[in-house]
Length: 310
Image (cartoon, rainbow, N blue to C red; front, side):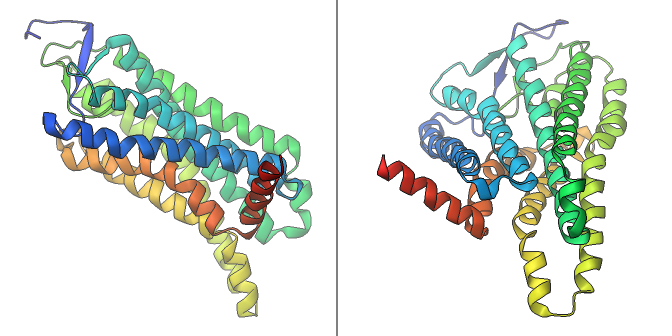
């Protein structure tokens, strides 16, 4: 593409993880199983929770929704990436790029709000167990779920509308494997001061709200657990949070590394870090929650036996 001003380019070229032709098929072979494992693993989590009456609790309700969102999250990114591994052009239309960016931002932030809802659930279960059923009733769970979807989608819509106002006049090559916000922003030759300020203010607030809920919830949990006299009691309380804390650490650790820095500092290392929270975390979630959770393991075994009996 030339260097004349183009308000809306017809298409972008996704450079991907590597521009070397000899790397494309090995990358396809590597990421196809990852996608299949992610989808099948998260579907198993959903089916296990839906089929076992003992898992009909707020914590597992949010976990099943998280698994559904993770399936949507990776489906927004990986199928296009796989297609590009086998394509010579590696193009994505302007409209498709904005659509991918919209759902990537929306589902990514929905993940963080669901993790916050799960942290609140653990806080109530450990710090106020006698009133757990009353506090975490169906109405409040639905309210938390609605907020977990509405806020991220409104946030994503704002960023897409701002991106759509940009003028692109330089290269149309996106140095990434999908249409992420910052790599696309680097291609714009118009002022994106408003966009960057929005990212660093509204965007930061949207991220910090669930993160603050998680931190406050676990601080209260930690204080409560320290008051438990027996070591066995402390272990039992913490064991219900271990899986959730592992996922939170993976998710927020990689996000903070990629996004909490100036736009000019966005590098190849950030592309690799992005893989952690966009692809690896959704894939690892079923393993983290099933292997470290006795109820989930028992529920999964029951589901397997039912399938075999049929």
